[in-house]
Image 1 (cartoon, rainbow, N blue to C red):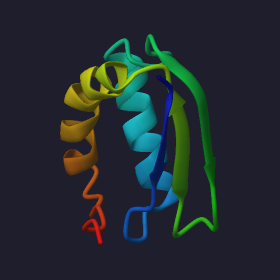
Image 2: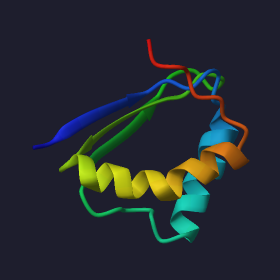
Image 3: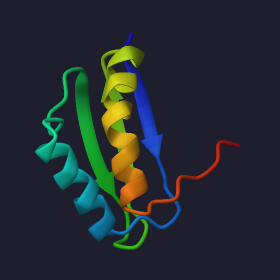
Image 4: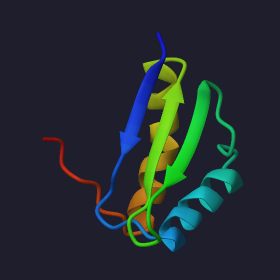
Length: 81
């Protein structure tokens, strides 16, 4: 079953987004298996991301590569409600 992911980090800048994106491309995760859609939007100092994944397992596998890059870019993820 497909899943949708909406990410709204606290004040992610375009520079931080680009840093994470470039790191993913360099690590071979630029077009990961199972990602059906990716979009980013918002003002330059508050970028948000919306993705659709084929399965939770595909997203979880991607998260292993994504997590350290988010941390390295200094992005603060909002706490779940």
